[in-house]
Length: 268
Image (cartoon, rainbow, N blue to C red):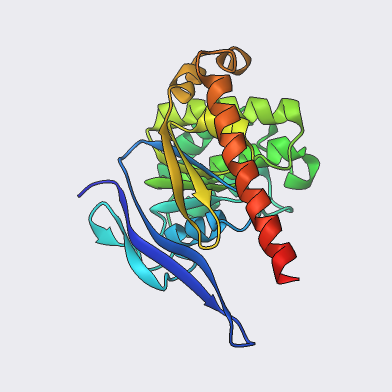
């Protein structure tokens, strides 16, 4: 079966004092090739844990993950990660960062040079390819991180709050870039975010997670990502159903946060 299949996934963390935290409970999901999924929910709902399991950084307590018919048992180049902080090599040039994966795989420049240069151009980095990372703004660094991920040609791109540290204008520009690259490359993307607006704009499919234990509370199929590929994201926010869906999701998350606060007060 093609695509990403998450089957009855659970994750339990055992603590030194003998207690445990059930981070995820019986999460099942299938993503077809080329789908863009955004995931949000209150703090503690297991969003990042889910992403780390898909990346192969964590082994689940129960359940399984398959990508294109084979089991995910650890990190692999078929799944690329873009972190909240770029995790770039500060002393290297932009081009050396983006080409790092192919070079470490033993590929010659003739094999990766044209592709890397194309990624630099499409992410707006062509004029900065010889700059060191520390010379770039936060937004530019996230462009480098995205281009570096794409240079490895993964089947699935995992994004953990990749735009969370950016200012509002830069974040909006990067949201447009993510949509552009999604359509151009046809990659499957899972994006974790705390922003309801971002989840609506970037999620062809959107999951709202519920906490304790983390599980899928509700799923949406949305038109806004396709509308934003060639459109103005500010205009997309005026589209029919956008404001209503935003308020509905905000209400869900607010109720969850209130429930969490109530549990904390009862525990104390």
